[in-house]
Amino acid sequence: MGKVSVAEIKELMKSTGVGMMDCKKALEANDGDMDKAIEFLREKGLATQAKKSSRAAAEGIVTAVVDGNVGVLLEVNTETDFAANTDDIKNFVNAVANTIIKQNPADVEALKAMTIDGGTATVADVLTELAGMKIRENIVIRRFVRMEGVLASYIHNGGSIGVMVKLDTELSADKVAVIGKDVAMQSAALNAPYIRREDVPAEVLEKEKEIILAQMAEDPKMSSKPEQVKTKIAEGKVGKYYSENCLLEQAFVKDTTGKLSVQGYVDAEAKALGGTIKVVDVIRYERGEGVEKKEDNLADEVAKMMNK
Image (cartoon, rainbow, N blue to C red; front, side, top):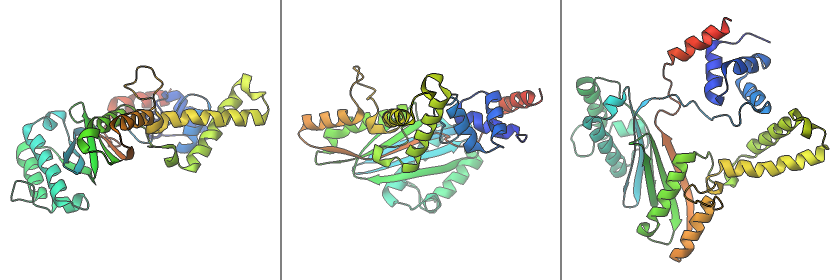
C-alpha cells in the first residue's frame, strides 16, 4: 500500500465525484492505479459511473452552423468569459465556421493556413492579431467537425454545449428539423456516450457485469444467492446500463409520461410524416471538456487532508 499524491487524489475526485478521503483510500488500496481505484469505488457503491474525462472549466465558445446540407461544430477557447462574449471573438468564430464549411480543411492546422471567410488574411494571421492586439489573451481553435447530409444542431446556454445530429431520411430537411433538434437537445442534456446499444464495446459490457456482480457481493441480501441467479440479475441490470448510456434508449426528456424512448419518439414522428428517419451520427462538444485549469483551492484542501 503505497503513498499517493495530491494530484492523483484530485484526478480521481474529478473522475468520480467521490470525496477525497474515499479517493485516497481507493488509490492506496490499489497502489495508485487509477482505473483499479475507479473500479474499487464503484464496487463499493461510492461511484455510480466514472466520468470519461475531466470536466475542468475553460472559457470560449462552442458554435454550430448549418448551411444547406453542410454543417460544422466548432470550439474556440479563450482565457476568460469576458473575452468570449466580445463581438470580436463572436465574429471571428462565425468567420472560422464559414471558412470550414466552404473550404473543408482536413484539420486545425490546415484551417489556419486558409484565407478566412470574408477577408484576405489567413485564419492564423487573424487569430494572432486578435489575440495580441485586441483581446490580449491566448485564443485557441481547439477542434471542429464538418458534416454533410440532413443535419440539425442545438447550442446550449450561449455556447457552453453544442450538438450536431446527422439523419438518414427520404423526408425533406425542413420536415425533420424539429426532430433533429430534439435529439440534439437530448444529447446536450444527458450526454450519452453511445448512440445505440450496438455501439457499446463488448469489453465495456463485460466490465459492467463484473462491477454489478461485485456490488452484489457487497450486499448481504444478494451475496447468499446462487451464482446462476446473481448472473441473471446482472444481465438484467445491463438493460438499465443501455437506457442510461445509449442515446436512443434513453427516456425522451420531452415526454411527460416517462414511457417514450428517444428511438420511440423518432419512429413515431417519422410515421406521422409518412417516412423513415434514422439517427446516423451525433457529435457533442462541451466547452472546456478535458482542458486543465488551475484549482488552487481544491489542491490546498486536499493537501491539508493528506497531512492529517
